[in-house]
Image 1 (cartoon, rainbow, N blue to C red):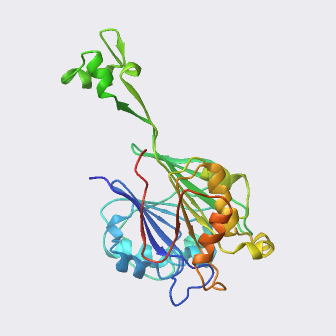
Image 2: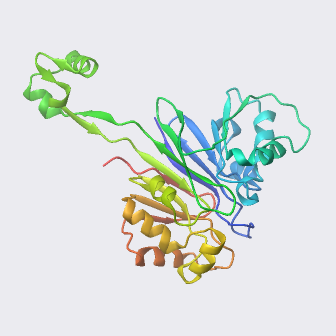
Length: 301
């Protein structure tokens, strides 16, 4: 049975707190695991969440500030210690190659696993698999930063009542799916498009075109809301979003489930992020993330 869910490993911005670890997010997408922004302590959070190194297939780093990347050293060494039997691909801004190299080889260890380095230098598709396309879009932050987006290909949903009306049943259903036509009946006559699911991961950024492009039509959007709206000037100065800004992006992009995260330590009431997001007009499903939370990708409509 396929599983599509977000496992939240950490939700703090800049520094960890007593209740929030540095960033870290695992997306389970069918048989694959994509780890986003492993901050300091991610390896231990994986243990607490029941996530093994063997679960990882990709690592996606948005940018090289420590709260989004210091955990790379431990995660990579754990991948090698556990002798993960498959190749793992790492995506990160090409401009930060020196930081990736330092983290990958921060201390002495025995390399046993192939990690393919696939740095990001421009907007567009990074990888295509049978189950999804991984895309990147540039964001607006004091250091180069990219957001990531997973897009499942559209499929077809067979319509039983139309199949019955045309007398198509049994092996002929598979035949018309393969060949696109049967006895003058086209596949379009007995089926409809099944829209592929979409997921986006948007971290440290001001509002910019990349934010909207990543969020467009997402079933699940994970997005930073470092500040509350009263501190919008501070957010813009430091290259971040407020809860209200993030919610308006989700509202305008038609997002089904919004996950707010990456909270400044200055705030003590998580519920205020939800209140401000609702006040901004977002009426979809809304989660204010906390460490070790699991969020399923919404079922198809």
